[in-house]
Picture 1 (cartoon, rainbow, N blue to C red):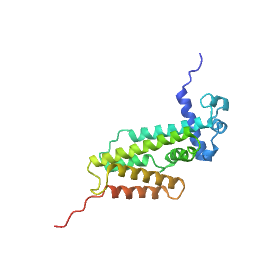
Picture 2: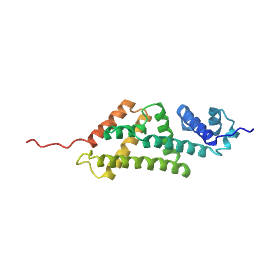
Picture 3: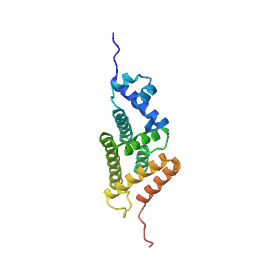
Picture 4: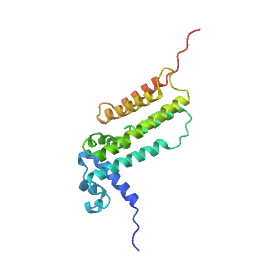
Length: 202
């Protein structure tokens, strides 16, 4: 009886092989041959799934987006909205080995997209997903009445939060910040965003 092949599982294996190559050799190290060797496949077998390097890279980034989206969308038991917002944002940032690899893959598309319209579209999906997440988190804080009274319009706050998270992540990937320093900067901004209103002395 012929063996049943789980194509989704096989594609996931390839995505993880791409991530390992990027983690070890950078995005320039990704090729059909290098990923096939990393996955223990032949280049010909890999080409049954992805004909070009660009297709392989795009899929690997889409898998990162899907994996992070699943984590940030998972139900949370913690009733503390402040803590939940912080935890969700840290799921998208390079605070440990796994999330550093994910961020490396996602942000590599900033440069790759400059010369490849298809990869630019993948980068746009990543950007839009992160912006929408920041919008939802700001709305969550607003609904819970946790935003500082002079914080500003929700759309402006979402854009600032997105810019901060991306900027800190890039600085961490470039080793300008440690994971601890990156997290401290995020905490400082969230404290400012959610600072309690001052009360006038009586």
